[in-house]
Length: 315
Image 1 (cartoon, rainbow, N blue to C red):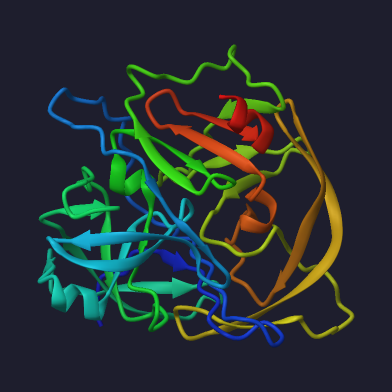
Image 2: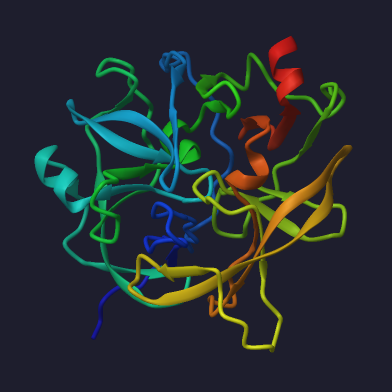
């Protein structure tokens, strides 16, 4: 009784999918006070670009150092809402808890387990000297798979900087939005610049789809277009899913979908229907849908650029 409860919802698929590798989904919903977009400061050095590995069942993996200790394997997850660190990494890197008062981390199913807010001395990617601002939310959790050391939410790790995730080229880079700002009037060929739609109490990147749905761009998800399964047929899911809170949900493949994001029309998007999930789980666009694209996120001007692989190579 009396334990503080912050609404955190981490979607983590750690069960086998058919006979394939285990898969990871991470999307963290968080209730906290609103904050105005931070302005960049000359004191921030822009980290150099790094390459990541696209690992089946684990996502976009980048070498990461925590408090000078590492390297560790962190998944780049735009939908997380916090930097998540495993208990083992927190012990090895001597990560300090900001409070000994636990909070509840709830999974996709609504089941929950305990986590602890933390603070970092340093966070680096690619090499131990390539430091990130790391001013955002940090949580220690025991719910990650044993072969995943943490989850790197770029918005929380790089704020107030912007960032680029070029999935075809496997490159992750930062930029200063006050110097290289995105503009709605400057739309790339075969791409779009759209509003970064915010939650009431968070900074995760949502976009508006042409059908009026608000969708989370979630690079931590191995699924495609994620929708709630409204079927009452009782058909079993294709995925056996256990989430970070210890609960279970099911997911099944559906026919492909056609969607629009601003001026960008996406055809035959792989679609996954999820059942048994918490009612607050949003529509999501995961890696199966996002792999052909380079995405740039400007948190100051609240814009997101989505460009095709061909446009990425031209630029």
